[in-house]
Image 1 (cartoon, rainbow, N blue to C red):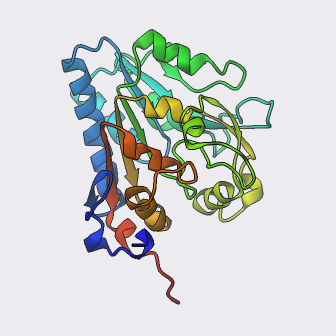
Image 2 (image 1 turned 45 degrees about the horizontal axis):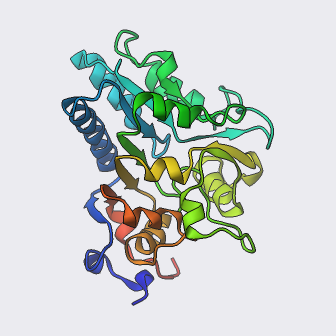
Length: 280
């Protein structure tokens, strides 16, 4: 059965990853926030000294809510280690784009999370980690130091990528096993990823989307103790079906999560719509 022909009502039949639907983007935000706090509490209850989360910037909206709740309830995140998934670069050998660039993930985290938190409740600066293009071992070293990732939170890109792990390009030789073991690294973004990111952030101005980024690898993601994925875009309907029902392949990077021991997806209702053509 072609997974792209599966109706919403049939998506659970034989799905290789557990999932549930929520209403809309607001519900996705609410669920992300609840999962953030519940997973933090679970890790602390399990005896973790430092709780390590790999976190995305998108979908956006959740960090403002998390910061506000922490401030209101005097909830400390001093024991949280944040490893951000990725960041845009100025060039293949360059550094991060400027923090004041509207596309900057550094800037977003500062404006919508760290800068909103009461400093007494915020993770210390040394526990706010981005993969570094000039020190690419910094994420693996942090994971060794802090005892691995408790939860990797994330979304899914148009190519099925998690973080900026786009699939191998046509003609590129990379087995599924090799792809699953790719570490943190600098990457050239696929045309598809740059295009859809321009649609969601820049009014279709693809020239505004950097060609290069630095990302945590599939290796770090797959080695996380838990993985929680949130999907809220209409254009994710096809990829959700490929991930949940298609073969496990590097051509759909998130399908490699089918082998993970503790992975769960939360989908907005719009992702359940059948991804078949219709003129509007």
